[in-house]
Length: 93
Image (tube, rainbow, N blue to C red; front, top):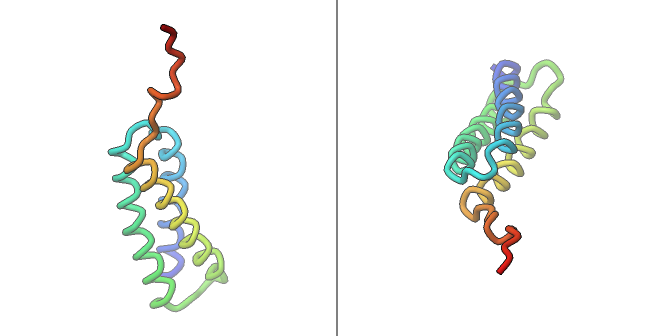
């Protein structure tokens, strides 16, 4: 269970980070990814502390959990704060 969940979370992390950068202007998708990431974080820490550590990947598993926290925080910031592109436009009067 430990190794399987690690690889599931690792694949989710890669997909999540790639899509996060492609949809930065869509706050609804960022919020959705952030909340899914919260579930992944909870599951990740639960498996890390509850399952028997095998395969010598426990350090990587723990690092992945903490990096997911950072990614979720960025996604929540983008999702709820938003990126206002209208203030960066070059409007001439």
